[in-house]
Image (cartoon, rainbow, N blue to C red; front, side, top):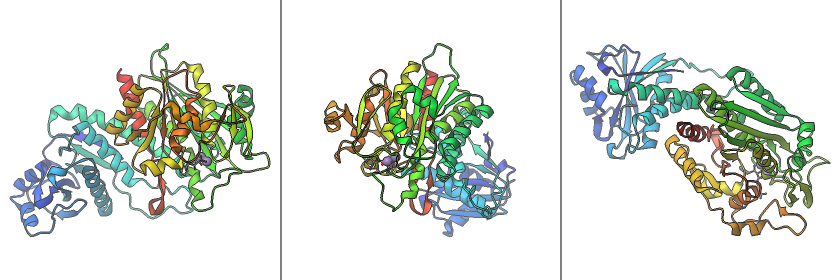
Length: 496
Ligand code: BES
Ligand code: MN
Ligand code: ZN
């Protein structure tokens, strides 16, 4: 989709369709009023007759409205004006995009982005309009023999700002939105691909191809190189599968040479069967999404490249399958991590932390400004926060605050859980330096406490995206989260 920003009055738009909002009680938005005036009360008449009541998500398409240069007017319900917040705005844009693609117009001018949203600014409105539009039109049909019939004619959207002076803000936000949307699309596509296609080798090949087309550096370490590094914990998980592991290193050098990089680490389990501690069969297909942390790192790099962000960023992706073959980890096995610390594996299904810990040790060599890992790590996080909010744990509160803030402005929220030393008690082992599980209580926290034993040398935060990386049920599919959060975090860092 192409986006442009415009500040002209709506009645003078030569467009296939001008989109304006209607609040509850049939109150037109500002652009709606302007159009109604030019049309000598034509819209007010229609509202009075009750054909459109302004309920959220309602739409009404009008043809041949007098006094205008556009072919059509689309009215979109906004709900109560006093309650016009994030969700109502996003719902309205979604309803508009759906109605537009149903009518089959090629282009439209959206006068929703200039409507004030509680506690948000114009930049936010524009960025979210871009994201919602791309999200609404997203389809994944790579694996269908015949792509589903869809008209998909909508090619160009003009987003309105109310004054000329707002054009630069609007344009910057549209570019940011498009970069984030491209990153989310990449993350979604990789997540939605089945485990037999999206293997560790596939992720590595994708990273290499992206590096070429988008101009950043990549290095892919194979099994032998991983062995040489002494990543005994990561390799113990990989051993259970016939599919060979990879360790992917991405580098975006947008900052000055000496600038310490932000390191992003993404969990790349391309299928999590649980291993010998086998998962139950129901919904096990969804464990193809266990590489969504890795996909979000790749998606973020895609966005960074598009934005040419002046910041040094390193991406680390340990990737393998968690399978139960004859050489797989067994409960009770003890492995030695790259850090030298030994781990008693009491549950082979707690494999994410086993591959992440070695990547976190590897991160030390970059002398990072900070490290953020992203992982579909615990079912417990889904119980705690559901599918709305990602879990956040950190050994540095300033870094945690940055991520909380980034999630807030990106509409991709996370929420901090405590990481007090007392939780480490639960990881004690009779036979090794630590166990890989901490029992039922506080499962998300003990997983992070485990990782915390490998992150003593730098500021570190952990995002548990088990509940937010994909949707189940009828709308099953990857969400592309937390690419928006990560991009906003890095954009703010680049601003200094
Ligand atoms: N990938 C899963 C976490 C997960 C489960 C994400 C369900 C989303 C939905 C992870 O590898 C895992 O299996 N974790 C275990 C840990 C437990 C054995 C301590 C879990 O959460 O059950
Ligand atoms: Mn698991
Ligand atoms: Zn897993």
